[in-house]
Amino acid sequence: MGRYLLKFTKEGNIKYISHLDLLRVFQRALKRAGIRLRYSQGYNPHAKIGFAHPLSLGYESTGEYLEFETTDHAGADSQMKALTGCMPGGIRLLACRSLPETSKTSVAAAVTHASYVIRFHGDEKTGALMEEKSPEYIHKEEIICRKLNKKKQEVQTDIRPLILSFSAVKTNGSGSVFSMTLRTGSAGNLNPEMLIRSFCEFCGVEYVRHQWDYRRTEMYFLPERARQIRPLEEFSG
Image (cartoon, rainbow, N blue to C red; front, side):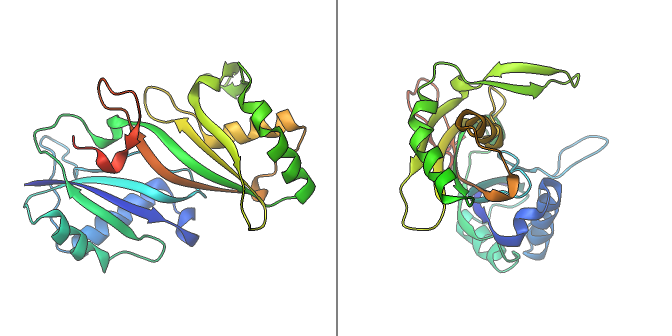
């Protein structure tokens, strides 16, 4: 039996398929590649396959991760080679490595942060204003946002502790680009769209969804007793 961590991209039109549809894409690809997934025991067995953290619909990514277990141990290079020719356009396999079968920590449970690059395609003057005000925004001690709780009641929450970094990025291309690293996972999670909505409100700018392109660039984990986050690609179980 084998356990693997696969890194891949999700770009182009395939960004519009849902999390569950993407899971089906990989399940079909694994089957076409002749890779036999391992199943859980019990009355309702399910394949041991899952993503590190779901990606919102409409987001692109250059740093997605899939964990899966097989009934054989063909080696990470062999698994990636077999899968490469079975993936649709927009999904590019970047790396595959073996994980310890004895580890009780799943990749999904290990994720603590994610980084994003977000491009604004609106008015140039508006973009320049937001670039100018980004340092003032991130240096606030509190960033209060409104959101709905599980009971559909509007509550206020401080998202500042969930933001590791946020800044404008100087580019030669069109539009304004913002880079950020946010808490992600069960211990704390911030959707980048909530941050951008808050940032627009701070700048006195209307948030218009189609003027923004979202791209997740990497996911991270914080090893026990470590002080710095590390790319999930280095996770060893």
